[in-house]
Length: 494
Picture 1 (cartoon, rainbow, N blue to C red):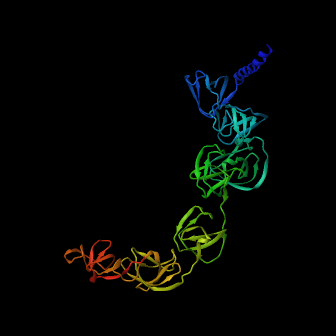
Picture 2 (cartoon, rainbow, N blue to C red):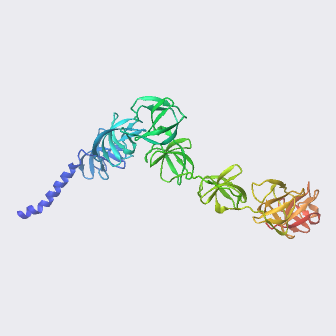
Picture 3 (cartoon, one colour):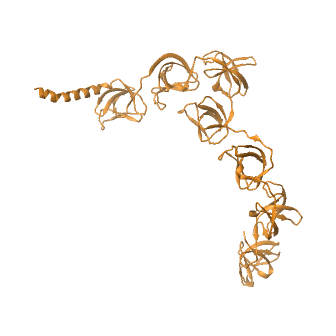
């Protein structure tokens, strides 16, 4: 008999445990992080009574197999028990009064994604009775629930002297007798006005004493803009909360007007919106040091930038050998002016200006479009003449930065980039330039019997790509001219 009792004892204990488990969850408040369906019975095939959004709080009943009984808004049924999370218990605190400086929500659970909440308008007051992690449990006239600690402003405060601050008012704002939204209104600060203050409260208000006005204004309603930029793309949020609504974005290395709210957030104005950006990766816009030195030039095409960083926002594109007026420097960058633009350019991209030329073999060339002849071998220097298409030019000089020195028929001397012209070398029967006098007859085939009605209206310079039976084939038009009626200049070399 004793042996039978010993054998049955483990089974009895297991049964008791199951019975206790079946009722242990009864009355608890729980939620799931995924959508759940309330069913009419604890079965996969049972009728679905209601679809429940994620993060919705429900009251538990007894467990039956893998299902557990729940009640939500008068609907009772069963949901799969796996993955349920108990609504946490809060730690009691000595009750104190607080308010919110922006529109907030009292949440049923300490989760930003909570499906159930009570709206809490800006300046609403609450009584805090408990806490859980980064959340307070608060009670208001509208209801109760969890409220992020970062959203609460204390009703207790001290007023201290601060370093003078000048701020702007972005919209008409009321002054209060004390730094509390519930205190009496003593006046109004008009939109667009600026004020300098030397006192502030510990709960985020400035004291204004000027021009017959006296009272406190919330810092949230003021703007103290300084230029800042972020080293990565940033989201602008409606309030200073990680889960707040996204209302805009700032590309990295973009200079914006920003006000430091606290160690974690900046209030910014950008792209027509005002909101909050995390302080991570923020930098002051650097100030360059004034420098006196000779003008420089940029050796290759480069961008003039807003900031002294590699991707520092583009002001404009600079052509190679553009003259730069140096205004100052910052670290490895020059701050320069080019025409109407100012900005930063890396020192390593710049060099001293030198217009020394060396003699070369006589070179003939032409241009395919009107090209400026400049006073120096630098872009943005003064124009002294024009090179016209259809005219052959010659030079015997080239600068160290590959600009030809040219003298025009009127005596004007200047420079043109080598890569802006088409030069010719030794004569050859293949690809060459052809000087065609006015009145020259064009042929459709390399034969006298195929004369066309077209003739050269004026002296022109064209390209020939081949020769056949005493006729030159014109590359662009496909027509022919008699070889002995024109002047070949030479082979195209670049």
